[in-house]
Structure formats: structure tokens, C-alpha cells
Image 1 (tube, helix red, strand yellow):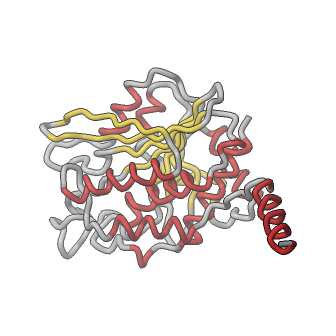
Image 2 (spheres, rainbow, N blue to C red):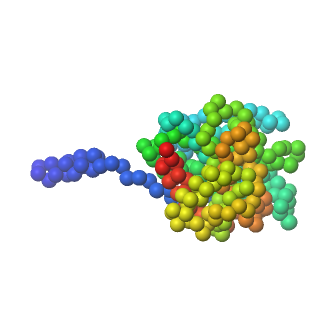
Image 3 (cartoon, rainbow, N blue to C red):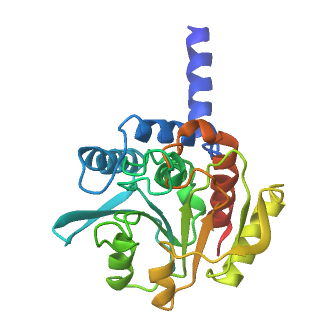
Length: 284
């Protein structure tokens, strides 16, 4: 009897302990990449694209995010943006990534008409956002956080399509002005070199890269400008919203059939994800 009382007391004590914070896991994020890659190429309108969107929604629901789907048509194709929301603060901070892949590997010298596998260009950004959906501590969020999964980013200049179709639709239909939009695109390269994008908001560039440096990641997130990107952050910047593109464009497999998960690293995902986790949880 005494042993049962002791065990019960220990269980009650454990239940009263505050939950331990969850640290962003690059390993778990990499598993989200593998889950997407098992579906095959994921161009907008395909069965694999539909399954990817459903997978994103299932993960957001699993971790208690409020879901919104934005559906519209573009050039006779059904488009679906997916948004997860959490937090009740006065400001809105949006993290975005595109989940579609390019329907033709036009940079591939061997087979430029085959679809891109999309491990880094598509799956890596989605993976970071999904692990953030798991690891963000809602009790520390002083602002609303939206995780936005953009559709129809990656088929620009193919068959009359434009770039950034999904993010442009979202930017033009916002009913609030977010404090910042941070896009995560192509961040999983094992040879990680992420520079400032010249078309991003410089103050937010500095804030994000400073957070990375505080975590010891300054060899990988390098606070110098290099590329000038037209990406999913662009439509928001055009609306006068502070927007940043976190992108590792020094990736030789971009838009080729070699954009596969063996080129990526859980450590690279963790550096980006952990930086964003700390940024969001410490933002006032």
C-alpha cells in the first residue's frame, strides 16, 4: 500500500512539472522531406501535389494549428494555398514556403523535360515549417504566427505560367498587414551558404542573421548580400510589407533531376529552423 501511495505521489508530481520546451529537430524536419519525396514530383494539379497538401494539413492539425485553405483557379488549374495560424498577439508574422515542384527540369542537361524531384526546391522549406509547427512554444509567442504553404510558385516561364502565383494571390487578398513575411526556400543543402538577398528588407535580414550568429551559425548564414531574388517574398514586398527570402541559391542541382534528398543535411535544416524558432519566440 505504501509503495502505491509513493508511486501515485510521484506521478502527481510529474504531472505538475512544466512541459519541457521542444527544440527544433533537423532529423524530424528531414523526415518531412522524405515523406514528400516518397510521393514523387509534386507539380501543381498532380495527384502527388494533392497528397502533399493533404499531408501538410494533417501535420498542422496534429499540432493544433487553425487551418485555412485559399482556393482559386489559374489558367484552368485549381490552386490551393494552405495557412496554419497560432497565437493571439496584436501583430502577425508570416513564415512561408512553396510546396509545389517544377514540372520540367529545364536546367538538366540530360533530360530537361522530366519533372524535378524537388528535395531542396520545395520540400526543404515545407519541412522547416512543419517542424516549426511542432516545436514552436505557443506560450512564448507574443504575436500571431501564420505558416503559409504557397502553391504554384515554381512553374514560371513554362507553358505561359508566371512565377509566385500562390503567394501573389495571398499578398493581394490579405485583410491585415503583417509585421513581416519570411520565406524559406532551398535551405537544406549540405553545403549550406545562405547570404542576404538584396531584394529583402535589410532590417529583418540583419535581425534574422544576428539571431543565427548568436546560435553559432554565422559560418552558414553569412551576413553579406549576394543574390537578388524574385521569389515568394516579392509579392508581399510589392504590397509595402517587410519581406525576407532565406534562400541558399548556391545549389548546383536547382531545377535538375539531381535535386534529391542525398544532397541535403538535417544539420542545415536545423540551423534555419532553430534560428526561426528563437526569433519567433523572442519577438515582442
